[in-house]
Image (tube, rainbow, N blue to C red; front, side):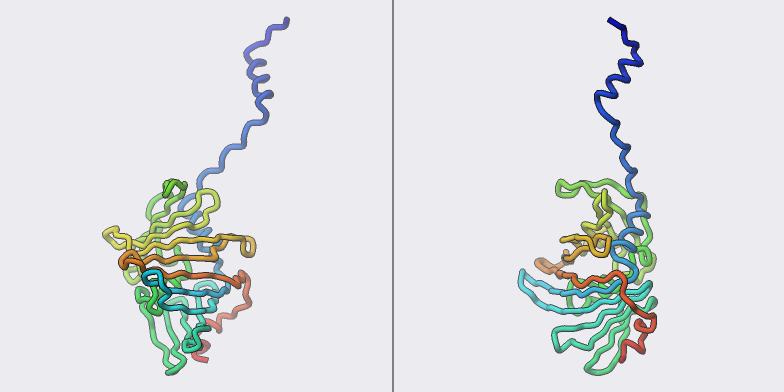
Length: 249
């Protein structure tokens, strides 16, 4: 009976076990995650409809239907319902936030931190163009387990004191980089708001959440739900559409 050398024994064992598994891809960096969220999940050019419902104690408190348009550093919201709000428009022109009031034909400037139409969202929550524009990454991405689920945490700090929140903790799925939860914090580290992303599906070749829930951690039972539909990742929008002159027309 032939005697197998240790090398041949090892080779035979490898062949019996089948091909070696491919090496796991390295985890995404914090920079890669923020870039993916900003430019793939929420594309730099897109349009969509939002049904926004604000709840207090489990009951609907306010509700709005809005059409949103986004192009590069600019974003515009046109109110569609209720009928009394039709014609109201809001604009981020890349520098400042504005609101046009159709009933009085007035245009007013908005503050980032101000509540959006009395809901649990701030103006900047709805009008933010990208995370990277307003926040800087604070350290490397970190693995976390939340409610038994593996996540990756990216910590962000505001670049400017006028930004709505001093810090953001962004939790994403480690494999897909899709956002799952965001927590908004004060300088002292107190969480004041939590955002949950649900019903994620493929839209135009990239993931997109059909439902976003904004929980006000300072008011018991207060939350605002955003439901998205009619998402278009390649709308035909001109820069002129995102000007104060167009807002007033």
